[in-house]
Length: 454
Ligand SMILES: *Cc1c(COP(=O)(O)O)cnc(C)c1O
View (cartoon, helix red, strand yellow):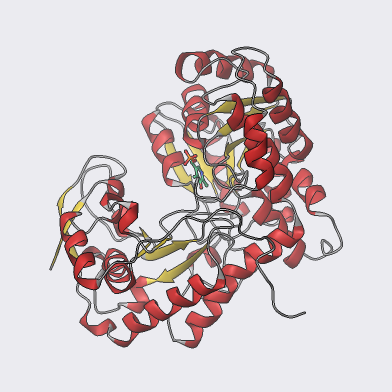
């Protein structure tokens, strides 16, 4: 059959409250045009993030009841640890309450002033944690990854030549090399197995550990199966194990490809690093057999890891974004191509080319999507990355709007509604205006900045 269906039935539903355009205009105004300040009851289709928004399965809900809340040595921890190690064969697995807690622990140990940590592309919390330690976060994405129209199959790849040069020039300052799979910031674009191995080989040659930010490991593995020569007949779990066997450790947000609503972990091979991490963990998260989590959360993650590598699920998952991208292309709406794993990225700078980057075309589109149809999305552009450490402003590499797809939550009818909303905006795009920032914090300003229309 050509139709790819949602490979699940719906057992429990959450009603969506429908709003009028007049209500939404009021909501936007009182939220100062920042969608992070909007209440979710006022949102029709919530594509703000795919993080922690997954629908859990009946088996995950059942697993919650099996959660053992013992402070130390809970069987839930050992089930969690075994589920992680079955896919990611690291010696030490340390649970945390989210991905950023794993980042904070890791970079407190390996970061610090004068150091530089290269990656294909650091995610925003990763960058913020590196910078909070005093170190520099350096993105070394391949050229094609920065061109929204390039159809390179692995636009998340590390530019290994630039990595080599950085290590040659500043190896003493580099404590570790990182890879984010898939590249969230650049469009949910995958990293090839070949690139993971090449990056590991370069890091190893300089005696540096490779850490994978594995938030979307399953989506990345399925892209490898679909697109990388020689991988088509391989099982997804085998590809996953190959990806992580090349690395020395990982950070993970279980709110992504562990299909859980909370959780994360840090995994490493190095015994000394693991000991330092566990000491910090006790200080900030909890005892090493629960980290920042309840026993039931560890159970939900363990079951989620067994479900996320299912190929029927992954085929449906990747097809969701591909479908939206195809339909938007037909409407003449520029998106990052080829489609990514967890999100559709509209190229707002090209779509609203009458709005200059420092008037935030991405944020203007985010506001329009809400006003038109109650769709909540997220700017990934000059609002998120434009503020420099000296307080000045520079256009970001791209001005994108991310439509992140929660896992197993929305149906094709919701996707069709979304496409209609964007079509309506496309028909009047010339009328959209930019915004200015009236209030902003020092760091991660996109969460709390307040805007006013120009
Ligand atoms: C979400 C995410 C993180 C941070 O994880 P949280 O659970 O949100 O703290 C880190 N890296 C990437 C690539 C992510 O997508």
